[in-house]
Length: 105
Image (tube, rainbow, N blue to C red; front, side, top):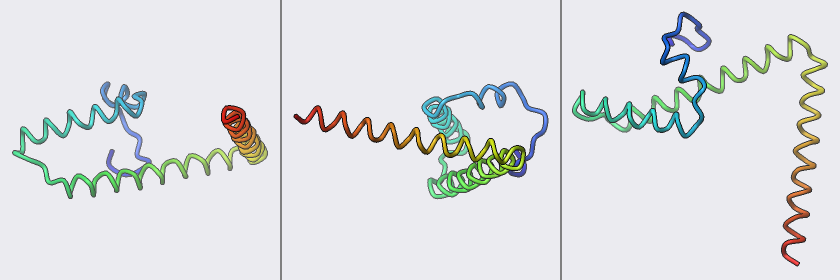
């Protein structure tokens, strides 16, 4: 990836990496860092931390951009989904709270 939002031809490993869950991604990163340590003789943890922080910023930017595109595509549907998710979250929180109160009795 050259720039955030850049989409070009993907290699097979890149396409498969997009469907990996968080734990699988952490395992991939660990093995990648191990390989880099073997090749370079050690990686500076500060530079790795800066890279992770930059990647998080790019990820947040990409998620915000995707959310904005969904809003521009169909504003009414987007807002209805947001309201529905909010109400479902509140109902789930109430159920959890009620279950905890009943379990404490």
